[in-house]
Image (cartoon, rainbow, N blue to C red; front, top):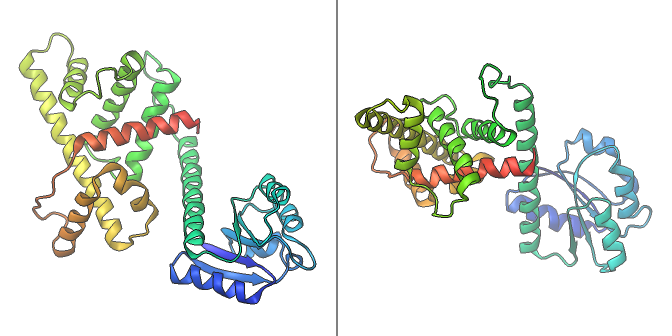
Length: 310
């Protein structure tokens, strides 16, 4: 992340820069001592992601500076000041600032606030990437006799995006996983999980019956169910490999941070990271995966994206 600091106190700018650098939050790409020296062009040239700006400055204060920027450059703004006027703080928030930090600086507060803003930036960028992806996705339902409802169509598309994020959209088990979240969406619509989340065996049995038809024997259904479960477990395990590899390369990788703890128990991820440190991806391992946790996370993440209306 790229930071820019605008404050008339040189010592304060230095302290804030030190916190950002010590915590490896990003790079401070520029500083200025007054809002009059700051414009959208300067921010754009430096690819600024987060702007720290003081409320009160001698020539042009923070409020006026923000007002001059918001129409021409989108940047996340954190305001800093000794002033605790509710009216001024309220006006700052109405102009679109993310947080208001009071002086003197509290190191933990600065780190916490910055991490929250960084997480929001990453989320918004992911959504932007999703929208670009979906704009290029052809209507794969156009050749089907029955066109699914908006919710059914969207949840499988978001599921496909999540599988792509996890690096397994091309795995054999990815189609099985999409069938599962489609089934769960319809199941929840009818029964609302009144009896709890369905177990994987029951889900796959119903999907297998639908795939093979009512004329299929129990043996055929069981065979298809077991084959599907094997494909799913291989895909999930590959996802674990992908995330663990990302974590080894860069513990702060956005995908690792966002997905590792959601889709897997973190002890499992750490164990696989340790294994990968000393062996190849194809080596034997004792790491156990929790397929239920993965499927629940996939479903509820996809459902959340549908609910947000992206």
